[in-house]
Length: 226
Image (cartoon, rainbow, N blue to C red; front, side):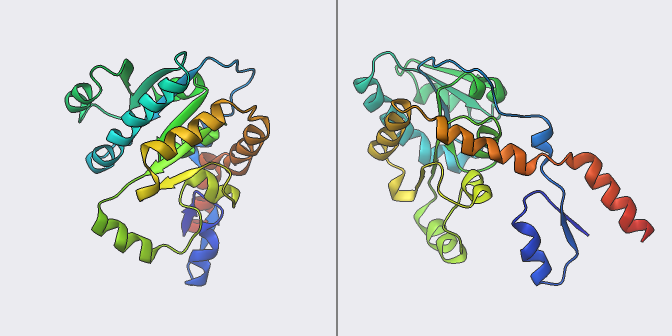
């Protein structure tokens, strides 16, 4: 029995004659769309948790910060890390950029930001569950990207877009994940109303909030007793 976190996974397993059910995502029991948010000119950077992600993304994010600051001096930037594994290196890299750096407080920082620039992965799902506007970015080494791009058979790579079935949030991948593109997409969102975007993102919580813990436990009991 396979307990699927996302609805689109079920069809894949059933094609291969595997018993699978969609139980929802446990994060949806913890996170829900924020309410009554007032703009604050705060932008959050989330460059990923693995060394390879940070290595390729951080330089472009920092250059994007410069471009965005040049367009709006009132913007303030912070960065939230999933762990402290590369804290010293990141601290040195952002020196002189006036970027607040913290570890392990991403949910609070996401909720208090106008926009999040986030590495594709679970972090993007967290931003989506909180229904906060985002730009999704990702870079791999040239060789890894060449292999991965041949294995993927989907037009969306970020979890928010995959769940919603369309390109609701901007995805900037590989060569497109450069400072110019990141800053342009970010500024467009910062200067927009985003009401319609937020309404679409709120559907992510609706889709995934199926009380997955209890549903999973019941599915396992039924399977064992069946």
